[in-house]
Image 1: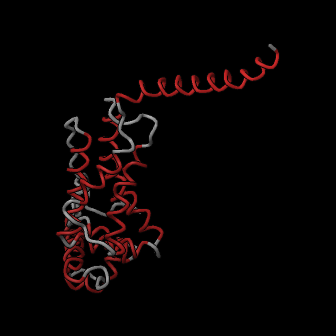
Image 2: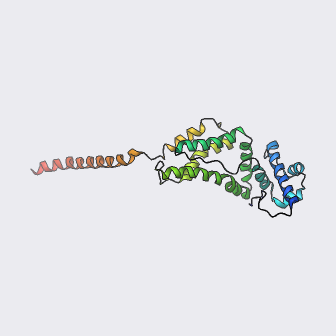
Amino acid sequence: MADMRANPDVKRGRPRQLSVRDAVLAGAGQLLLQAGTKGFSIEGVARLSGASKVTIYKWWPSKGALALDGFYTLVSPSIDTTLTGDVEQDLVTQVSAVLALFRDTAIGPILAGLIGEAQRDPELAAAIRERWLEPRRQCGVAIVEAAQAAGHVRPDLDPTMILDQIYGPIYLRLLVGHAPLTDDLAAALVRTILSGVLCRASDASERPARSTHHEHNWTRRDELAKAPSAARHS
């Protein structure tokens, strides 16, 4: 699905069409805030924006496409990524921002509605992945890859898999509502996942030690097994 937001590089000469498009987008965002995705309609946007339904359908092929573009008048296209060198703190800061957005603003319910609508609209689903999920995943990937480069996180792990395990429970709670999005959830999730992916300085030294001990045990067993046989031949 094409990004229908006004392009600042569009050639001049048709200011009327650009102003109508902006009015439609503003109306779409306003209607989402007022009625959510359940109350969102092309008719409602036409009423708020003053544009005709014919004009709206000229630019947006479906209600979902318009709702998503209206959604983007309410949120920033990405999230800030600050690399401090502390992977846990950087991830907690980022995850906390997303969690607060879902819990403390209208964005959470609206996004949940759009994701529900996307189950019946493949183009909307693809647009959500491309325009909402992917930019945010890349911000998280930058944090994990920096930690891998610094030797703090295991280099053999896929950063996106780590992020899926952190964000998965948040989206589950947003969509299913079986548990609240609490203040301590971000730190708890990050800490739990990092406990299994961080490099430990003792790992390299412990592995040879365990191997030597293992080999020693087998050597000792071989000696004990041979002892009776030697006694019988003496």
